[in-house]
Length: 296
Image (cartoon, rainbow, N blue to C red):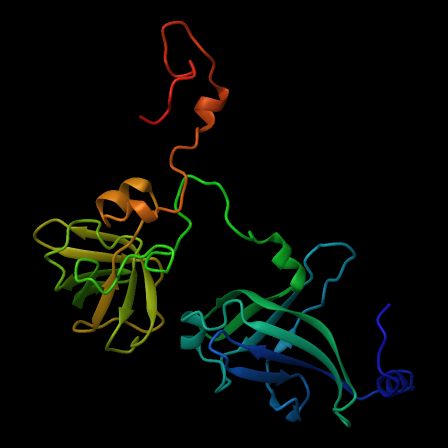
């Protein structure tokens, strides 16, 4: 059973209460923001909790056991603190969120009711919706390494060791023609077809300056270089917008060896027998299941 402080419990026990909701968000870049459904700003713990019209939360679902508690927060894109660009840039992904119940007449009377993180954030033209996930969702995440066919390192991190500043893996260019998520570019003629597929592109100039997006496909047919993005940028891409783009990695042993010359640091297990081997059986005059080495 949850126990509140004596003062807060006494206030709740009154016939009439002055309670409101406050939630504090701490983004991955350490920016802290506070919001409340009260009609004026409240300040505590060094954070100003700003009132937001059109900012509302759904019912909180709580249950016994290890099920993940959920709460959706909806709001208009009218706050100076929450911008469409920051949402699209992923600054709110997995941000820490703390939910308070507060006596707005005396903010020292407050209790933390939920802790968790922001899950999926969806946005429209005029509003956004953010999913709150309780701490229980951490129990559903993979901790440590797993035995899998592909590499589990991030290209360019300490475990991978590839230097992404190497000109062989980093290109600069400019948009020449744009159609939704498909961008024809200049400056990448020297790179082979598919080199930047699954890579990351960062805009250096234009309305999307500073934003990083994932590359879905890179095509170079000798006459034209084209990059397809996974998502349409927040702002329109204009001809002449410049960018840097990093090579992509499919996390296979073949790519690690041939594309990056980095097989010694491959973090997967490419020789694990697959389902065909597990379900197979020995046959006369065949070597697949006779106990001979799989890798020679």
